[in-house]
Amino acid sequence: MDTKASKTKPRLGRGLSSLISVSELPVEVELPTPQPPTTLAAIAESKAAPLPDASPAEIDLAKITPNPHQPRKDFNQQALTELAATIKSTGLIQPIIVRKQGDGYELIAGERRWRAAKLAGLATVPAVVRDIDSFAQAQMALVENIQREDLNPMDRAQAYRTLIGQMGLTQAELASRIGEDRSSVANFLRLLDLAEPVKAMIRDGRLSLGHAKILAGVPDVLEQQRLAELVLSQGLSVRNLERMIQQGPAIAGPPRAPAAGVSPHLQDLEKNLSRQLGMRVQLRAGAKKGKGKLIVHYSSLDQFDGLMQRLGVATE
Image (cartoon, rainbow, N blue to C red):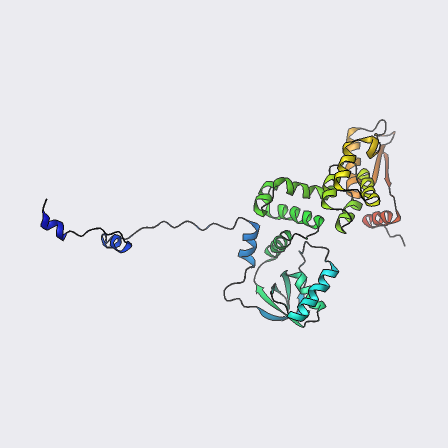
């Protein structure tokens, strides 16, 4: 071995600088391709987060209008009053997000803060202005509200259905994006098929989500309503309601047998109409082909007035 050559030959060190010095060839590095956001939270952050140079601006409250795509239909007035008192004493710390619309602005996110600021008597609020289209605005409003634990179950269910329709997702895909089980998404969507009076009880908080999920498994809408009223009148727990339904007709009440001669097709139509109207519907075929009767049963004047409104019939 030539000791002289070994002395002049550069040795490889263990540091990064020595590795770089042994070769003058350019280093080719394959960078990973940026992936689009796959979760609803990431989508919301990528579209709603302020740009580095997008500082909040003080905007006149009177120039801001609500988000037309807002999925939240009910705002707790007491909670708004409490938030208004906090804003009045400390100011609005977190800015709302808006987009330019004509001569004014339209809310994207932060409607509760906007409403509370109005109650607090503020003239202006800090807001970040974003340049997005109506579709992105709707999507961001859904994302913001769908992550809120106190979102009304019926509004949450409708938000799920809207997201599925707008984004072309399956229930499993939606569940994956929002970090929920597919069964949880399916249970919320089933609430939309409940009788209208039962939906109203859920919206105003008289029925819990647990009660609602059990009632959604009852196919007869009138039975749903009867059981819901029983829960309210007797203060039944979710477990008691479930036990009552499992114990069968002796407890839950006798099932309604279909009228003699009613075809399975008419029975399905009756169920669909009953579900949509929230009232018992009967279909009876006449003696002549193409003729028959449609009977709608209402249990209160409010139900009757609601039916007239849906039919476009003036009752005055």
